[in-house]
Amino acid sequence: MSYVSKTLIVEESGNFRDYIIPLEHPRLHPNDRDPRTHSKGVLGDESIFLTPVAQNWLRLYEAPYKGFTTDGNVREGLWHRDASANGPTEAMTKAAEKVLSTATEAERKRLSYPVDAHEWRSWSNPEVIIVDSGIRLEEMSNSLKSAVHELLKASLSPTGYDKVVKAMKVNAFLGQVTTLTNVMNENSYHFCFFGTPSTERPWGFNLFGHHICLNVFTLGGEVVIGPFFVGAEPNEIDDGPDKGMTVLNKEEAAGLKLMKSLSPEQQKKATLQGEINDIDGSTMPPGRWNPADLRGLGGAFQDNRVIPFEGICVKEFDESQRKAVLEIVGIFNELLPSGAYDAMLRRVETYLDETYFAWIGPVNDDTPFYFRVYSPIVMNEFDHHNGVWLANALPKKYHIHTIQRLPNRGDYGTALYDEWLKGGGK
Image (cartoon, rainbow, N blue to C red; front, side, top):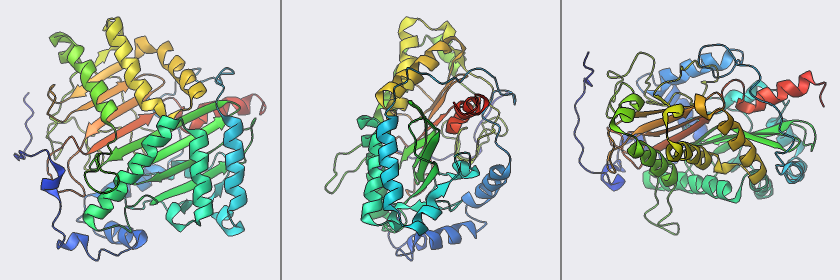
């Protein structure tokens, strides 16, 4: 059977400047609206693509947490606390205590939740507020905002923190390009804290908003970050003090490098049904496309999603290709501090022969594409998107979404927390 997109659109330019929405467009006005007014306006308009998507997200949010799986059944015994992880839990704990001591009593009440709270799952990546949990950075005092950034620095690697800050700056740049600086800026992110800071007991936090979502869990040296989402539209700043700043180029290059290294037969096995320029899902299998996530499967509120392994199994790869898979996972997980990073890569390598690589799109340096690395321990997705705040109808290489999921209850550190509870909290 031949699958052909029902909508044929041709766009030649790959320069985001050619797709800037005219500043007089009604969508950009009033341009001084605040984020909650903006969100209410979007979610109250059934003609906007995000509205029905968000309604379904909220239904998914109400379901009890089970975990991301291949067949609806959680595979037990995959996640165990690694005593050698040696993450920066002590520094994280001090930074977290500073956050809580800097916050006022009213702020602590707003941002604090039990360690196993449902609000872990409240994150989303649009600029629209879907679940209004925690406190937004833009609502914090400068001292509290600074304390949150110090917690990020303590919890992430230097490279990881730099990536997050760059994504924030790129988001602010998009706000400037569209004149919606109250909606999209460096501080348009929610912060929630879970549990009580401790070097031995479990706790964590999340930070989420447009194109950045981090869920950070720690337990006695373990640091787990997942789910996480880092994106950009565009992924470069071409003007102002941060001119030349880019983000997510390494992920793009690593995925394309691996696909190019495959033989024609291997590429055929890796390639999934669907066209990269599909803008309505007509070339994709049922349930595999929506206007917010496009080809991405592990986005917001997909905590219990069932996705079978697809593509080509890494067991069929030669040594250089296997190393390229680990390189992709390593780049995604460069958010992690060193000890936790090493522990994560050991977990991934243990199940490398059960890992699959999948691809959608042509294989060349110019065309957008999608790829996925998926194992019992991790799922990393990379997708080029069409415009949301830029006017390109087709995917472009300057609009990128990257997602990490930790299957089988690895997300939010849940499997490690479950094990800790079963052990009597030790």
